[in-house]
Image 1 (cartoon, rainbow, N blue to C red):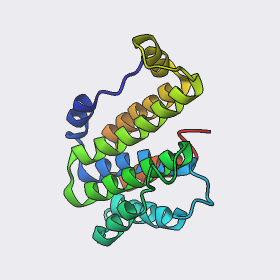
Image 2 (cartoon, one colour; image 1 turned 135 degrees about the vertical axis):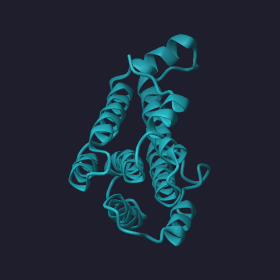
Image 3 (cartoon, rainbow, N blue to C red; image 1 turned 90 degrees about the vertical axis):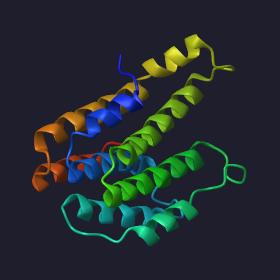
Length: 187
């Protein structure tokens, strides 16, 4: 059974070149975005961020500062927009923001935070589908075993391995980015 281990992930990501880090973070954010309904009010902003991040992963210089601020400003207020869709939008926008930070900083931690948002979303989804009234050790174990959680963690591991092999080969990075567009974290 796979588990999310952020310190281990940061260590593994630290061995990758910057383009691979941006690709990893963008793939995590892309899977979240693919799960979000295209009618979401800020879908155009999300698409712009994904396009800019794809350009960054391909080695083009980007100016992400203002876009990152727009993403953060678009995060829905949990009190005014409760529910799984708003949580998905929040995690998508935050993961994109971390990916943009990663493109500027080249820091593995930013890429890991994008992955964490994808993991947190599938964890939340699994918890709601299992409909437990309290979070016990048994419930947490059931959430971790949930197919949606295991699928996202497996995709992160697969992407990490492929990025180790690809390093900064633009064609191989593009394959990973394009695949994330057809792999929603939640169906």
